[in-house]
Figure: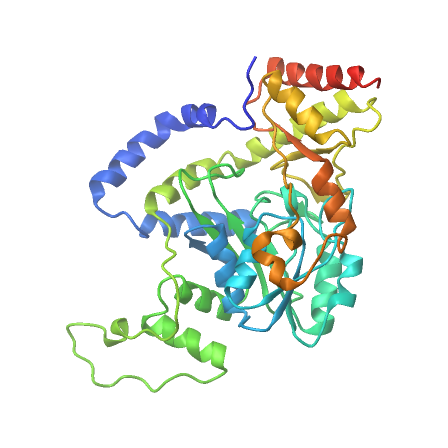
Length: 404
């Protein structure tokens, strides 16, 4: 039996009948970027996430960068984050000229250790970027409390956490307790809510941040670009243009900030809008699979299951086990047809592109240890019971050979 780490073909087949006519209509319409499909998706996501503003963008990395820019994070500023995440988390911070400042993680849930954040805050700290890694939410109450105390922005990296909840509230609903509260999502095809290409989302309840981010994602031109510049600079706004030709909008040809071209293609909005209707079902199935694995492996000593805090709903973007036999188990499973993944083999503070930050091996021992022990099993919703039984059988077989 050969079982992939992820297989999207079943999901595509399930949605083919309803999606293909919509895609054909889109193709013949000639309107390929933005438009009503994107507006509808934004409204649907605002409702689903219970948030005031949902802003579609080109991908999850753009979402992080634009969110940082909207919070006026710039050169020599510091952003507190985790060393255990995908590279884009730190890449986004560095790309706006700021410095990622790392805080070690909690070994049982892999998220940033909120109790260690405060001692890393300096006069240069401008934001906290917690990562809801693998879909497990961070302790947002404590993070918001710290942010309020030091007047910091909170930019949640929820690129793996669509559908997760903290204290019954959707990740992405953003805090009313923090003035600058933003959440960023990725809709890369492998995500729980995946497009057929790149796509992303930013959410906030702050009207000014909404204006800035919508401006930045489209070259910061026109009247919205002017408004964004005024907000960022703390000014009332430029004098209105009075020399107006009725044939065109003169604001259209003025750009007020260096922005980005990060618009969502409307075909992605069509696909995501349809998949959104099924997201809770997909996430529920992932939880069922996670429960099956936990029950199957609970008697294996030395194989540590992912912990889920009582006050969260985990969307299980990944099912991450910890084992001292990481490389051996990885090879054994692959040799027996079970694909698996090692997220993440290198912590961010030891990435070659980030060595200029001056961190060294041993600075974040928990993250470094987790990187050497974590292995992820298939958890996509279309796994059937035969496949799950086979995966469990092979994991048990491996440990039996190890004497467990």
